[in-house]
Image (cartoon, rainbow over all chains, first blue to last red; front, side, top):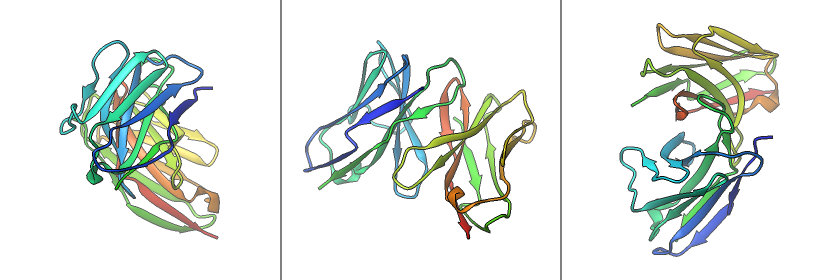
Length: 116
Length: 110
């Protein structure tokens, strides 16, 4: 149980393109999902908390207009990297939890984004 | 906000030896501390967790200890095996927001 699916796994595109990444909870409902960014050989950096039916809350230093988050249903959150540039290249990964407070987060497989 | 520090950044041990990874956190309100194992290019996988009302937890070869007063927690792996080689992350959480340590690359030499 508690499977999180993320799609696509890999994206290569030109600078200026907007890229949408989907995160789905397959066997549970998630009112909250989380988006992380991970640079090579570095830790997972929390970018934002995706809240079903309301606005996402962003961590300090994360541009909300650059990284648009939509959590339209209890099983789907999307992250759109708008007008992507090479510095946006990174590994993006989402997580969700079926339980209440302070329960293990289950991660998607991640999306490797490469902007040329 | 929460600041989690993790040491060491790399750890090399001989198969069968023990490995210890340590983390400290800054926010006394954090009350949930999971440990994740991440293999290259893969998703992090939960290996063990501990809540603030417990001082120690063990699951076979893996154990975690928590000292709330000192705000530090540690992962202990005994009888290490080559398949334990991976990057390990600690995290501290309050209200489901996870803040991760910088990771420890564990290499278990056969």
